[in-house]
Length: 187
Image (cartoon, rainbow, N blue to C red):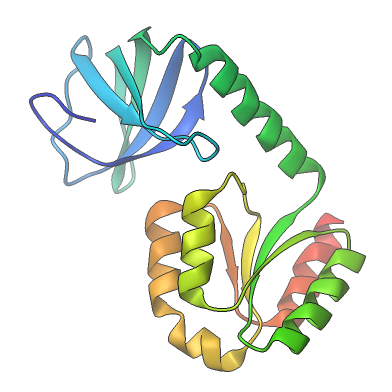
């Protein structure tokens, strides 16, 4: 978001006519009625989208703010991009998507197979940095990130911070037994 102020925000909801953002409380927000310019990057889109809109509502939500914007200028293919994002989200709702992080290939494959047997779609990474790169570069819509190696779990603080800041809705699981327990309630 930029204009008279610049800020990073997390996209909460998106439609072809508007969007809602969660913004850190340290940011000075534009008032309702203000014109804002937004640079938005959707996971499956290889470019930044430049949007403009009018602020409809600003609400305090704990330590953050909710900003609702009615869009007035969007790219020509914006409707198609929104539809693709919605379809990807629906697909994720049907099958839990897990990102499995383990440096030991053999164990990672065994754990991935066990998680797939529980009905999960499993994406594999050999390190926390590889996991961050995969999260940043794809339309994963993860349910959880599972760190299978206890050594990696103790070294995964950067991954934890990254998820907390950019994807707070994604569960962080650092114990394989915990995965089976949580999935048992969902499956």
